[in-house]
Every structure is written in C-alpha cells, then in structure tokens.
Image 1 (cartoon, rainbow, N blue to C red):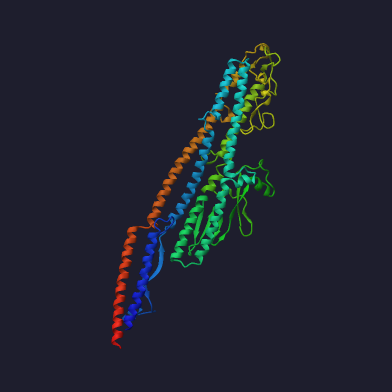
Image 2: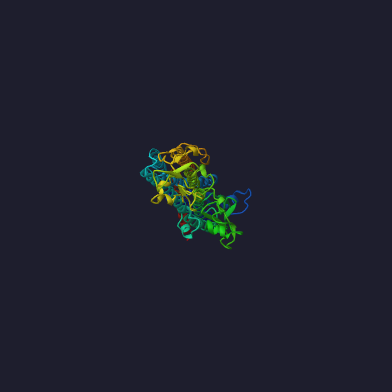
Length: 534
C-alpha cells in the first residue's frame, strides 16, 4: 500500500514536471520570432525526498521522489552580447556621420548650377570679359553682378550649413532651437531608457533566478541595453541576480535599481554662463552648440559639467562630434571644418581682390570724366565684412562693397596698373594690367589656402567631403556586415530551433504519457486493494 501511494505521488509529480517542461517548449515556439527572445530549457534533476540515505537499499528506494525542475535555463552568450552592443554603438555613430556627410554633399552640390563652384567660374569669366573691355560700363556692371552673386552664394551656403547644425544641435543660444533639435529627442529617449533599465534591475533583484519570470526580465534588460548602446558607448557589469551596472566612459549611468547619472542638455551659451568663472560665448568657446552634462537625478548635483567627450560612439557621439566640431573631425572633414574652410576661402578672396583694387599703381576711371584715369582710393574695396572693411570676413557675412552698387560705383574697379609712375598715362582707360593680375589669381597658389588656388581650394574642400562620405559609407557597410555576422552567431546560440523543440516536445510528451499510464495502473491497483479490503 505504501509503495503504491509513493508511486502515485511520484507519477503525479512527474506529470506536473513534464507538463511544465512542455509549457517551456510551447513558450519557445510562441516567441521564436519575438525580437530579443532567448530560448529557454527546463533542466530536470532527480527529486530526493529524504535526507542521508547511506548504503541501505531500502532507504535509497524510499529517498527517490522522481523528478523535479532544477531551473529554467536561458541560453545566452555574454561575450557576444557585449560585443554586439559595442559594434551597434559604432554603427549608430557611422550612420549619423553618413547622414551628416550626405547633407554636406547636398549643400555643396553644384549640379544645379547655383553653387559656389559655378559662382566662382562666372566671377572669373566676368573678369576675363573686363580684361577685354576695361573701359566698358557694361563689362564692369557684369563683373559687379557676378561679385554680388558670389558673395550671396557664399552667404546662402553658409546659412544652409548653419541650419544643418542647428537642426542637429540647436543654434548654441536659443532654448527653443535646442528643443527642436535632433539631439534633444535623443537625450530625452536615452534618459527614459535609463529609468526603464533601473526598474528592470529592481525587478530582477526581487525575482528568483532560473524562472520564466526572471528570464523574461533578462530579455527585456538586454533589449534596453541594446537600445542604450545605439545612443552611446557603454560598458556593462552584470551581477549574479541579473541586474547590471552601466557606464559610459568612466561615468556610471545606472547602478542596480538607481539611475546615478541622467543627461542634462544645455545650449552652449547657457553652459558657458553657468561656469565659475563664466566662459565668454562665443569668443572663448570652441565646441559644440549643445553641451551634455551628467546630473544626479535625486540630488540635482552635477557629476560631470561637460560630458561631451565621454560620448565617443552611438548616435549622441555621431551628432556631438560631427555637426560643429572645430577640430579636424572624423576622417578630416565635418560641418565645422567645411564652415571654417569656406570662411578661410572668403577672407582670402577678400584680401586678394581688395589688395589688388587698392594697391599703389592701380588706377580706376574718373566717374566725372570717363576718358581719364585717376588713382584708386584705399576705400575702393571690392568685398567688405560686418565692420564695413576687409576684416572679420566669413562666408556668412561677406558682401560686395555697397559703394560699388551706386550709380558711379562701376568706375571704382581699378582696371589699370602702372608699376612705374613715370609711365602713367592719364588717358589709358584701356589699360587692363590690374585686371590681368586679378585674373591670374585663378591659377595662382596662395599660402593662406594651403598652397592652392582659389578654385582649387574649393574643389579640394568638396573633394574632401566626397572622400569622407565614401570612406564612411565603406566603414558603415563593413560595420553592417560585422553586425549581421554577430547577430547570426547570437541567433545560433540563443535562437529557437524548431527541430530541437520538436525533439524536446516528443521527449516530454512521451514521459508524460508513460507517467500517466503508471499513475492509472497504480490507481487501479489501489482501487482493487481497497475493494478487497471491504
């Protein structure tokens, strides 16, 4: 009787265990296409219901209680998961840089005939025409118009570059522009992800490991870590209970159930003014339009004032160090270096043509007697900047001298030049020696332009953008292949295989059926014995 009751208990337990094991298989099959799901398996071990059994066979038999589930194992490869996140972060940075370089290429694109290259070409064509007809008011007005077009084209391209960086990081001053920028959305989402991760960590700390509930939390944890890695480079430190500590650089973002550092986003101007002593903006500030700080969310204490350097990868890294980095930038080119390049080009153009138009020995036509020459005036600049002179010129503020746009302005172009005052001929209105020197700048090498000509320097700048874009595209394509390879390995290690699940299902169903048959047999025997006992 005791043995029958023991057998009934054992088989009832076996039925329950195999039923749970079958439910694990069903859970695997149901989630085989769920993003981030890791396959699970019930680990079965012998169930002992007695203490020390020694060498007594009877005790050993009584000690056997059948089978039990030791735990629900979750398939995972920690090394591959961490490696995947690192490469994912790098891919996100490359994607951001690729998008940025694509924007730069579109801005500098001259295929529509309205770009800087076309404006420079027409500028020199007008100079060539003026060289042939130096006394012609029509040729002079045409040159002035192309000069005005060149300046306005520079202004337009510079404004487009500024709009591009403003869309990415704000304008550096306005809170409204910052809130409408790409980085604002990125930092807000990242802060939410950090909060979610802390909550999952807390749940893991209070959940028994090796259970379906814990494993599902681990899946959610890993998805959150992948999401965070898309924003920035992270280092993950896993605890025994499955909770994690997350760092970006040397800075702790999340420790267990506590967010140690949330991101605070400021305009560059607000950041500079908040420093002690304050940083003069923009004069003493050479950095991004937006500044990310790391702040303790509970106390408001600033852990790191300017943490931009900590974000070396991910979308944040791509945005911060591409849009307005005034260094060489990734692969030698970015929005900041393009703007700097255009600024250098414009200042050089202004210096070259202003010097030629106002130098000693240069002569313009007397507006009161267009048959005679007169010495050029030092104020006869061709290009001016915000100060009304030839200083402080950038691509954003370069403009034609307003004096050239007056009724008599065209006569202020100094076409004639006499290197020897003794050779000066007041009636030589057809002298174009000064224009010839202006025209020669098309091919002349200029030290301020790294030993290149004016057109050559701009062409080189466009070429750098194209080369950087091609390089980043190649890196991005390679990175995609790396990620695909890692994902494939992770899927092999953690993904659900229907063939394996079918084998397990048959195994557990067979065990369940066998246990059910034993249970029914024992139950029938017990009924017979109970009947005989009456």
